Length: 266
Image 1 (tube, rainbow, N blue to C red):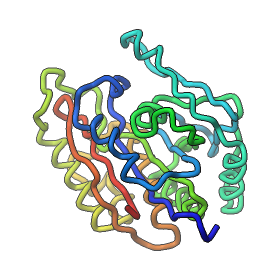
Image 2 (image 1 turned 135 degrees about the vertical axis):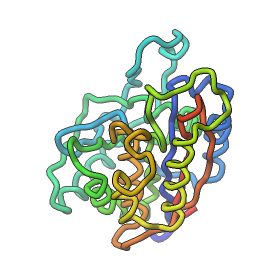
Image 3 (image 1 turned 180 degrees about the vertical axis):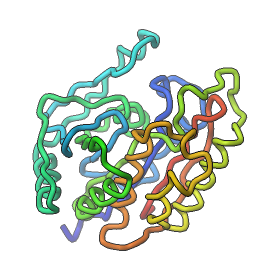
Image 4 (image 1 turned 90 degrees about the horizontal axis):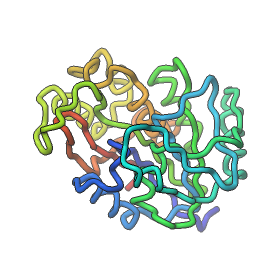
């Protein structure tokens, strides 16, 4: 593996399912992102939209495109992201997790949800790069997901891009549909706290964000959209107690939906 480029770790906020069509800065960022990264041999994506009782990995060699939303224009349901799967990578992920003391499983029936294909259809369109999805774990803490991510760190030296996909701020009930460019005060404050601690590499404070960050309960009424960030943190840190990240993009839609994205090793 000495000739394989060490891959970065990335977390993106994927926003609305309509991102593929929306004329917003986050879409432009994702379109450019692939050219700024080394080309991966495969992508392991952790999305906000799959939680399971134990860590689960897609094992199909041709995963389907899951349209896990309703009430959107038909054009969105017509989109397909026909990336191949990678059963060998799925087995490798399960082994890393099992070697770390977790029960883990391959799910050969599940496809890729919009947390995976919505950003990737912009960043790696028609690329042929294999994609495997790893679930979050029900009722497990941010620190637990950091620990899970640490076990995945060896994949970076095997040409695998580890991509967390969720939302830096995600409260759909607080969206201001008439606010196309402004930033709600509480959302901006939480987003800034998150960025400050990611750039400082403070995994301990980030893992305790619910107690330490301003407006945390409003920014994330549930934790599903921030948990992929913690898997990414762990994968970026490996065995190290801390790891400094970089903010790759910052914008907001509908006042409070942060589209902040971060990278490690870029």
